[in-house]
Length: 149
Image (tube, rainbow, N blue to C red; front, top):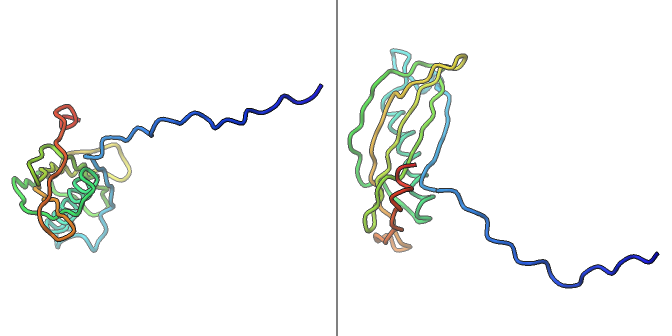
């Protein structure tokens, strides 16, 4: 029996892939000796640097523009983070203005060899989107339901 003829028409166009909410970023790091202070805990400046970086990633992914940190507010160090811990940073765009985004960053401390986990540090960062000339540029409006994710 002869082979059936294969269709010569192009396949139907596929729908664009569903893009996840890009206003949230999760990053995990290990706390090594070079990141700690004389108490053997994560240096506050190192925590701040990790958090600013996570806020930068969340804001950039959200607006797909160059962004710069404009303001840091409400930084709270709740618990020390000992050397040998893991830290997970969860950065989430929670508000948008005309050219700015407010990003809440939560830093969780995890014990390396157990399920122990606690919120160790929080901070709120304001980042501004820039155009190619370095001037503030509009950002997409945050959908109310996306802010609560």
